[in-house]
Structure formats: structure tokens, C-alpha cells
Amino acid sequence: MTSYKRDYLGYGATPPRVVWPGDARVAVSFVINVEEGSEYSVRRGDAVNDRIFDMTADPFPHPDVAMESHFDFGPRVGYWRIARLLEKHGVPATLSATGETAGFYPWLFRDAVDRGHEIAAHGWRWEGHQGLTEAEERERIARTVDALGAVAGVPPVGWHTRTAASPRTRDLLIEHGGFLYDSDAYDDELPRIVEAGATPHVIMPYALDTNDMRFQLPNGFRDGAEFGRYLIAAYDWLHEEGTETPRMMSVGLHLRIIARPARIGGLAMFLEHIAARQGAWVATRRDIARHWLETVGQQEDAL
Image (tube, rainbow, N blue to C red; front, side):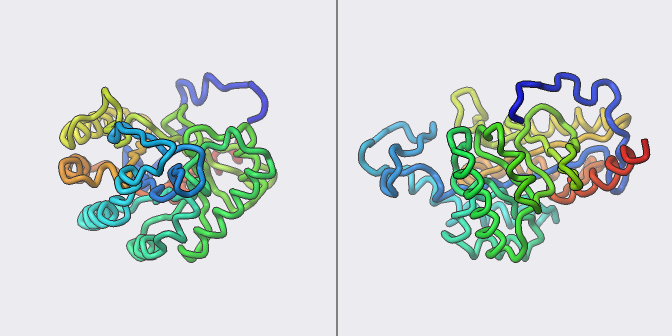
């Protein structure tokens, strides 16, 4: 990642002919971002308070207790509402969590693991890595793995950096060992494998359009129904393309955003739609990455 060489072709017109379990047309990945408590706050010594569009006042240089309260809704209320809905539909998710949240509310992770969800790494704090030194980034990766592994019972095998990774992030993840995949890519709709010495590494592309963060943009989703319709439109298109080449769809969720009462119905609408239309394999990112490695990786080894 340290060179400027970019791949504009990708799979081109001939993507791999992977077969998802159950002959599904679309592998659907629900990602629940767990960041609450890791946002910037002058009360904990940060230079700024975190800003989001729901909160327009900026009390800087004083603490923003209203902003903190907004984030606190996530673990207090939002998690349980999302967890119950996913359990009702029998689908697993990947919790992409910052490392320090494991110490803030360890009960949330124990409950998620008991429900069959994956715990993946979202950095130590809710921060970009572009400004970190190599030593700082290496230390944060190790600390995140240790914290999440301790509370989940197994170390995370997936990673996703907030906003921008550094040019060395993927190399440091591979160097650390134990990471199966990272989601620091927005350039495709299918995973890909990069060689990392003796251990292949899977890049699991993420998406920001099928993501509830757009509720907080001025031109974003207005209500849950609009969010649900957007997800359904994306799924239906991928479902049709899946007759030729199976596809993957990522749905980004946040405890403090989608779980609001007027929004959660959009997620329920989408879950009901994919269950009725069928053709979806809903899986954790860990399981999708493993399946890709075991199937596509073997095809590449045979060439």
C-alpha cells in the first residue's frame, strides 16, 4: 500500500465463479459498528469534541455532554433493539468494535458472542490511522487485538479503520499475524486475496451507501422506510446479477443510529424482504472471507 500503483481493472468482465453456501446469489454481511465511548471528547483530554450532524451546537472548548449522551444511547438501548431483531430473523452479524469499548461495556460483547455474532476490530479508538507513526499504529493494533480477544474469548480476525487507513496499515495487520481479512477498501463488491508471504490475506470491501450513517448527512436517508427501500433496491439488483456471478452486499449499522424507533423498521423491512425472496446467504465477514479463501483461493492455486 505504500506505492501509488492502483488497480483500476479488478476482476473486470470475468469475476470468479464462486458458489455461496446453499447456492445463494448474494452473500449479505451485516456490520454493526461499536464505537460509543471512543469518540473525541475534550473531557477525556482530546483537542476537540466529535461532531455529527444530529448535534449542531459546538460548546468547544468545553465538554459536550449532549454529544456524549447521544453516543451513550447505543449501548444503553440501541444494541438490545438490534440484537432482538437479528435474533428474530436468525441472522448473524459482525460487530466492528474499537478496542477500548471492550473495557467500557464488556457485557455487550459477551452477549453478542453468545448470540453467534463475530467480534472484529475497528481500531483502538474511533480514529483514522493516517496521522499515526509506524510505532503508534503497530502498538494500537496489538492493544486492540488483546482487548477484544480477552472479552470475546477469541482474538479478532478482521479489521476496519475509521475513515482513512495509513499506507502501511495492511502490512502491519499482516505482520501482526492472526488477521484473516481487513475491510479497508471501497472499490469492489467481491472479496479478493492478496499474498502475504505464506499466509493469504482477504480484502473484504465495505460500502458507505448501504450504510445507516447516511441518516446523519443533509441529503441522506429521511426515515427507516427510505433506508429499507434503498437496501432492497441494492439487494434486488445484486440478486439478478447473481444468476451469472454471485455477489456480496455489505450493510453498515450503528447502535446509536439505526436503532432509533423511527429507523429500525427499515432494517426489519429489509430482513423480511431477503427472507421472502430467498437467495441470500447472511453470514459474518469472517465466514465469508473463509469461504472465499477456501473456494476461490483453491481455484487460483490450481491455475
